[in-house]
Image (cartoon, rainbow, N blue to C red; front, side, top):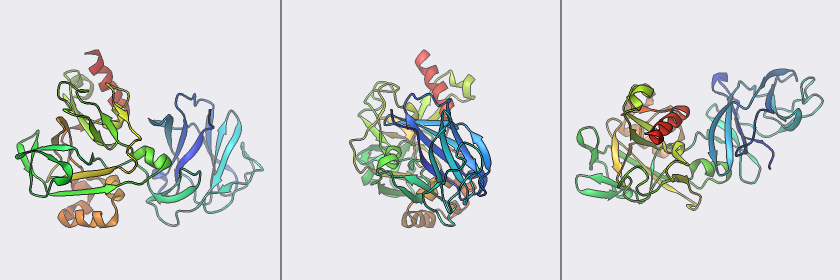
Length: 334
Protein backbone atom coordinates (compact mmCIF):
# COMPACT_ATOMS: atom_id res chain seq x y z
CA UNK A 1 0.00 0.00 0.00
CA UNK A 2 1.39 3.38 -1.02
CA UNK A 3 1.77 6.16 1.53
CA UNK A 4 -0.79 8.95 1.55
CA UNK A 5 0.43 12.03 -0.31
CA UNK A 6 -0.36 15.65 -0.93
CA UNK A 7 -1.56 16.08 -4.53
CA UNK A 8 -2.71 19.71 -4.73
CA UNK A 9 -2.32 22.74 -2.47
CA UNK A 10 -3.77 26.24 -2.81
CA UNK A 11 -2.16 28.61 -0.33
CA UNK A 12 -2.02 32.11 -1.85
CA UNK A 13 -5.30 33.21 -0.33
CA UNK A 14 -7.77 34.51 0.42
CA UNK A 15 -7.70 32.17 3.39
CA UNK A 16 -11.30 31.08 2.97
CA UNK A 17 -10.40 29.66 -0.47
CA UNK A 18 -7.18 27.84 0.46
CA UNK A 19 -7.28 24.05 0.45
CA UNK A 20 -5.08 20.97 0.77
CA UNK A 21 -5.79 17.83 -1.25
CA UNK A 22 -4.62 14.39 -0.12
CA UNK A 23 -4.82 11.07 -2.00
CA UNK A 24 -4.74 7.63 -0.41
CA UNK A 25 -5.26 4.09 -1.69
CA UNK A 26 -8.97 3.39 -2.09
CA UNK A 27 -10.49 2.08 1.11
CA UNK A 28 -7.71 3.36 3.36
CA UNK A 29 -8.73 4.13 6.95
CA UNK A 30 -7.85 7.82 7.28
CA UNK A 31 -8.57 8.13 11.00
CA UNK A 32 -4.83 8.06 11.79
CA UNK A 33 -3.89 10.74 9.25
CA UNK A 34 -3.35 14.36 10.25
CA UNK A 35 -2.51 17.52 8.34
CA UNK A 36 -0.57 19.96 10.51
CA UNK A 37 -0.36 23.54 9.26
CA UNK A 38 2.61 25.63 10.44
CA UNK A 39 3.13 29.37 10.83
CA UNK A 40 6.23 30.90 9.16
CA UNK A 41 7.89 31.09 12.60
CA UNK A 42 7.62 27.33 13.07
CA UNK A 43 4.69 27.30 15.46
CA UNK A 44 1.66 25.08 14.89
CA UNK A 45 -1.23 26.94 13.26
CA UNK A 46 -3.75 24.10 13.13
CA UNK A 47 -4.04 20.32 13.46
CA UNK A 48 -6.61 18.71 11.17
CA UNK A 49 -7.92 15.49 9.72
CA UNK A 50 -7.92 14.98 5.95
CA UNK A 51 -11.11 16.95 5.41
CA UNK A 52 -13.99 15.95 3.17
CA UNK A 53 -14.09 12.95 0.86
CA UNK A 54 -14.30 14.14 -2.76
CA UNK A 55 -13.98 11.14 -5.07
CA UNK A 56 -12.44 7.76 -5.80
CA UNK A 57 -10.47 7.88 -9.05
CA UNK A 58 -8.22 5.18 -10.49
CA UNK A 59 -7.86 3.41 -7.17
CA UNK A 60 -7.26 6.55 -5.10
CA UNK A 61 -9.58 8.13 -2.53
CA UNK A 62 -9.26 11.92 -2.74
CA UNK A 63 -9.88 14.18 0.25
CA UNK A 64 -9.75 17.97 0.50
CA UNK A 65 -9.30 20.15 3.56
CA UNK A 66 -10.25 23.81 3.67
CA UNK A 67 -7.44 25.41 5.65
CA UNK A 68 -5.74 28.81 5.59
CA UNK A 69 -2.06 28.35 4.66
CA UNK A 70 0.49 31.20 4.76
CA UNK A 71 2.73 31.61 1.71
CA UNK A 72 5.74 31.43 4.03
CA UNK A 73 4.25 28.67 6.15
CA UNK A 74 4.39 24.89 5.76
CA UNK A 75 2.24 21.77 6.07
CA UNK A 76 3.07 18.30 7.38
CA UNK A 77 1.33 15.04 6.48
CA UNK A 78 1.38 12.81 9.54
CA UNK A 79 0.37 9.14 9.71
CA UNK A 80 0.05 7.56 13.17
CA UNK A 81 2.34 10.23 14.60
CA UNK A 82 5.04 9.87 11.91
CA UNK A 83 5.72 12.73 9.48
CA UNK A 84 5.76 11.29 5.94
CA UNK A 85 5.76 14.59 4.05
CA UNK A 86 6.63 18.14 5.06
CA UNK A 87 6.42 20.87 2.44
CA UNK A 88 6.50 24.65 2.14
CA UNK A 89 6.19 27.20 -0.64
CA UNK A 90 7.90 30.59 -0.66
CA UNK A 91 10.43 29.78 2.06
CA UNK A 92 11.85 26.92 4.15
CA UNK A 93 10.31 26.41 7.60
CA UNK A 94 11.95 24.73 10.61
CA UNK A 95 9.28 24.07 13.26
CA UNK A 96 9.87 24.49 16.96
CA UNK A 97 6.90 22.40 18.03
CA UNK A 98 4.50 19.75 16.78
CA UNK A 99 5.29 16.48 14.97
CA UNK A 100 7.75 18.15 12.54
CA UNK A 101 9.78 19.91 15.26
CA UNK A 102 13.43 20.18 14.23
CA UNK A 103 12.78 19.17 10.61
CA UNK A 104 13.30 21.48 7.63
CA UNK A 105 10.51 21.65 5.08
CA UNK A 106 10.96 20.77 1.42
CA UNK A 107 10.25 23.85 -0.67
CA UNK A 108 8.00 22.67 -3.51
CA UNK A 109 7.49 25.87 -5.48
CA UNK A 110 5.55 29.08 -5.62
CA UNK A 111 2.49 30.39 -7.43
CA UNK A 112 3.82 33.94 -7.18
CA UNK A 113 1.00 36.40 -6.56
CA UNK A 114 -1.62 34.44 -8.51
CA UNK A 115 -4.59 33.59 -6.30
CA UNK A 116 -6.13 31.46 -9.06
CA UNK A 117 -3.29 28.92 -9.12
CA UNK A 118 -2.22 26.02 -6.95
CA UNK A 119 0.77 23.71 -6.79
CA UNK A 120 0.02 20.21 -8.08
CA UNK A 121 1.84 16.89 -8.07
CA UNK A 122 2.43 15.63 -11.63
CA UNK A 123 2.80 12.05 -12.88
CA UNK A 124 6.57 12.13 -12.29
CA UNK A 125 6.24 13.15 -8.66
CA UNK A 126 7.23 16.76 -9.35
CA UNK A 127 5.37 19.80 -8.07
CA UNK A 128 4.22 22.30 -10.68
CA UNK A 129 2.26 25.55 -10.43
CA UNK A 130 -0.86 25.83 -12.55
CA UNK A 131 -4.54 26.78 -12.70
CA UNK A 132 -6.71 25.38 -9.95
CA UNK A 133 -7.58 21.77 -10.69
CA UNK A 134 -11.28 21.73 -9.85
CA UNK A 135 -11.91 18.92 -12.31
CA UNK A 136 -13.11 19.52 -15.84
CA UNK A 137 -15.53 21.87 -17.50
CA UNK A 138 -18.87 20.04 -17.94
CA UNK A 139 -18.89 18.83 -21.54
CA UNK A 140 -19.37 15.99 -24.04
CA UNK A 141 -16.70 13.79 -25.59
CA UNK A 142 -16.30 14.19 -29.36
CA UNK A 143 -18.75 11.98 -31.26
CA UNK A 144 -21.67 12.44 -28.86
CA UNK A 145 -24.95 12.77 -30.78
CA UNK A 146 -27.17 15.70 -29.77
CA UNK A 147 -30.89 15.77 -30.67
CA UNK A 148 -31.77 18.76 -32.87
CA UNK A 149 -34.64 19.85 -35.12
CA UNK A 150 -32.75 18.14 -37.99
CA UNK A 151 -32.27 14.92 -36.03
CA UNK A 152 -29.18 13.71 -34.19
CA UNK A 153 -26.03 15.73 -34.89
CA UNK A 154 -22.51 14.98 -33.68
CA UNK A 155 -21.57 17.55 -31.05
CA UNK A 156 -18.49 18.61 -33.04
CA UNK A 157 -20.73 19.49 -36.01
CA UNK A 158 -23.06 21.80 -34.09
CA UNK A 159 -22.95 25.51 -34.89
CA UNK A 160 -24.36 28.65 -33.24
CA UNK A 161 -27.97 29.09 -34.32
CA UNK A 162 -28.71 25.36 -34.56
CA UNK A 163 -32.06 24.46 -33.01
CA UNK A 164 -31.40 21.92 -30.27
CA UNK A 165 -34.12 19.89 -28.58
CA UNK A 166 -34.49 20.92 -24.92
CA UNK A 167 -36.63 19.49 -22.14
CA UNK A 168 -38.17 22.86 -21.33
CA UNK A 169 -39.73 24.46 -24.40
CA UNK A 170 -39.19 22.24 -27.43
CA UNK A 171 -36.16 23.69 -29.22
CA UNK A 172 -33.68 26.44 -28.40
CA UNK A 173 -30.97 28.07 -30.55
CA UNK A 174 -27.36 27.48 -29.65
CA UNK A 175 -25.54 30.69 -28.84
CA UNK A 176 -21.96 29.43 -28.46
CA UNK A 177 -19.96 26.21 -28.75
CA UNK A 178 -16.37 25.55 -27.72
CA UNK A 179 -13.96 22.66 -27.38
CA UNK A 180 -10.67 21.71 -25.84
CA UNK A 181 -8.35 18.73 -25.81
CA UNK A 182 -6.75 17.80 -22.52
CA UNK A 183 -3.26 16.35 -22.50
CA UNK A 184 -3.14 16.24 -18.71
CA UNK A 185 -1.31 13.39 -17.05
CA UNK A 186 -1.07 11.81 -13.64
CA UNK A 187 -3.49 13.15 -11.02
CA UNK A 188 -4.65 15.87 -13.41
CA UNK A 189 -5.63 13.27 -16.04
CA UNK A 190 -7.55 11.32 -13.43
CA UNK A 191 -9.73 14.39 -12.94
CA UNK A 192 -10.25 14.80 -16.70
CA UNK A 193 -10.76 11.19 -17.84
CA UNK A 194 -14.22 10.57 -19.36
CA UNK A 195 -17.09 8.98 -17.50
CA UNK A 196 -18.73 6.18 -19.50
CA UNK A 197 -22.47 5.66 -19.06
CA UNK A 198 -23.23 2.33 -20.79
CA UNK A 199 -26.08 1.89 -23.23
CA UNK A 200 -29.34 1.38 -21.35
CA UNK A 201 -27.81 2.06 -17.92
CA UNK A 202 -30.56 4.54 -16.98
CA UNK A 203 -33.42 2.70 -18.66
CA UNK A 204 -34.39 1.43 -22.10
CA UNK A 205 -32.57 3.54 -24.68
CA UNK A 206 -31.08 5.76 -21.97
CA UNK A 207 -28.55 6.23 -23.31
CA UNK A 208 -29.12 4.76 -26.76
CA UNK A 209 -25.37 4.08 -27.06
CA UNK A 210 -22.45 4.37 -24.67
CA UNK A 211 -22.26 8.02 -23.59
CA UNK A 212 -18.97 9.67 -22.59
CA UNK A 213 -18.93 12.95 -20.68
CA UNK A 214 -16.48 14.86 -18.51
CA UNK A 215 -16.55 14.01 -14.78
CA UNK A 216 -18.39 17.18 -13.74
CA UNK A 217 -21.06 16.95 -16.45
CA UNK A 218 -24.43 16.67 -14.74
CA UNK A 219 -26.99 14.02 -15.63
CA UNK A 220 -30.74 14.52 -15.31
CA UNK A 221 -32.57 12.11 -13.01
CA UNK A 222 -36.17 11.89 -11.81
CA UNK A 223 -37.84 9.93 -9.04
CA UNK A 224 -40.90 10.44 -6.85
CA UNK A 225 -38.75 9.92 -3.74
CA UNK A 226 -36.70 13.00 -4.62
CA UNK A 227 -39.64 15.20 -3.60
CA UNK A 228 -39.19 14.22 0.03
CA UNK A 229 -35.38 14.24 -0.11
CA UNK A 230 -34.72 17.40 -2.12
CA UNK A 231 -38.12 19.10 -2.58
CA UNK A 232 -37.70 18.50 -6.31
CA UNK A 233 -38.79 15.53 -8.41
CA UNK A 234 -36.10 16.19 -11.04
CA UNK A 235 -32.42 16.80 -10.21
CA UNK A 236 -28.99 16.99 -11.82
CA UNK A 237 -26.14 14.75 -10.62
CA UNK A 238 -22.45 15.02 -11.66
CA UNK A 239 -21.47 12.03 -13.79
CA UNK A 240 -18.52 11.26 -11.51
CA UNK A 241 -20.98 10.57 -8.68
CA UNK A 242 -22.56 7.79 -10.76
CA UNK A 243 -19.35 5.75 -11.02
CA UNK A 244 -20.00 2.25 -9.70
CA UNK A 245 -23.78 2.53 -10.21
CA UNK A 246 -25.48 0.61 -13.05
CA UNK A 247 -22.16 -0.07 -14.77
CA UNK A 248 -21.00 3.57 -14.93
CA UNK A 249 -17.19 3.77 -15.00
CA UNK A 250 -14.37 6.25 -15.48
CA UNK A 251 -12.18 5.16 -18.38
CA UNK A 252 -8.48 5.70 -18.98
CA UNK A 253 -8.26 4.45 -22.58
CA UNK A 254 -8.89 7.87 -24.16
CA UNK A 255 -5.37 9.38 -23.92
CA UNK A 256 -6.24 12.92 -25.06
CA UNK A 257 -9.99 13.43 -24.64
CA UNK A 258 -11.47 16.12 -26.89
CA UNK A 259 -14.43 17.71 -25.16
CA UNK A 260 -17.17 20.00 -26.50
CA UNK A 261 -19.44 22.32 -24.53
CA UNK A 262 -22.24 24.58 -25.70
CA UNK A 263 -24.28 27.41 -24.29
CA UNK A 264 -27.83 28.69 -24.70
CA UNK A 265 -29.39 31.92 -23.48
CA UNK A 266 -30.14 29.99 -20.32
CA UNK A 267 -29.20 26.65 -18.81
CA UNK A 268 -30.98 23.79 -20.59
CA UNK A 269 -31.49 20.03 -20.41
CA UNK A 270 -30.66 18.38 -23.75
CA UNK A 271 -30.87 14.88 -25.22
CA UNK A 272 -27.39 13.43 -25.71
CA UNK A 273 -27.09 9.91 -27.12
CA UNK A 274 -30.64 9.43 -25.87
CA UNK A 275 -29.94 10.55 -22.29
CA UNK A 276 -31.03 13.84 -20.73
CA UNK A 277 -28.02 15.86 -19.58
CA UNK A 278 -27.19 19.51 -18.99
CA UNK A 279 -25.87 22.17 -21.33
CA UNK A 280 -22.92 24.24 -20.18
CA UNK A 281 -23.71 26.55 -17.26
CA UNK A 282 -21.09 29.26 -16.74
CA UNK A 283 -19.84 29.91 -13.26
CA UNK A 284 -16.86 31.39 -11.46
CA UNK A 285 -14.90 28.14 -11.37
CA UNK A 286 -15.58 26.94 -14.92
CA UNK A 287 -14.91 30.32 -16.53
CA UNK A 288 -11.53 30.46 -14.82
CA UNK A 289 -10.70 27.05 -16.31
CA UNK A 290 -11.05 28.19 -19.92
CA UNK A 291 -7.97 29.06 -21.91
CA UNK A 292 -7.75 32.84 -22.38
CA UNK A 293 -8.70 32.75 -26.09
CA UNK A 294 -11.83 30.67 -25.51
CA UNK A 295 -12.79 32.69 -22.46
CA UNK A 296 -12.44 35.96 -24.38
CA UNK A 297 -14.59 34.56 -27.22
CA UNK A 298 -17.28 33.47 -24.78
CA UNK A 299 -17.30 36.86 -23.06
CA UNK A 300 -17.67 38.61 -26.42
CA UNK A 301 -20.90 36.67 -26.96
CA UNK A 302 -22.02 36.98 -23.33
CA UNK A 303 -20.35 40.09 -21.86
CA UNK A 304 -22.61 39.88 -18.82
CA UNK A 305 -20.74 36.76 -17.73
CA UNK A 306 -17.98 39.00 -16.39
CA UNK A 307 -20.41 39.18 -13.47
CA UNK A 308 -20.92 35.54 -12.46
CA UNK A 309 -24.18 36.42 -10.73
CA UNK A 310 -25.75 37.03 -14.15
CA UNK A 311 -25.21 33.45 -15.34
CA UNK A 312 -28.71 32.56 -14.16
CA UNK A 313 -30.22 29.64 -12.32
CA UNK A 314 -29.55 26.04 -13.26
CA UNK A 315 -32.35 24.21 -15.06
CA UNK A 316 -32.81 21.82 -12.12
CA UNK A 317 -31.49 21.50 -8.60
CA UNK A 318 -27.86 20.34 -8.68
CA UNK A 319 -27.01 17.78 -6.04
CA UNK A 320 -23.87 17.74 -3.92
CA UNK A 321 -21.89 14.52 -3.53
CA UNK A 322 -23.62 13.35 -0.35
CA UNK A 323 -27.02 14.23 -1.82
CA UNK A 324 -26.18 12.31 -4.99
CA UNK A 325 -25.55 9.19 -2.92
CA UNK A 326 -28.93 9.61 -1.23
CA UNK A 327 -30.55 9.91 -4.66
CA UNK A 328 -28.87 6.77 -5.99
CA UNK A 329 -29.80 4.82 -2.87
CA UNK A 330 -33.41 5.92 -3.30
CA UNK A 331 -33.43 4.93 -6.98
CA UNK A 332 -31.93 1.54 -6.19
CA UNK A 333 -34.53 0.89 -3.50
CA UNK A 334 -37.45 1.82 -5.75
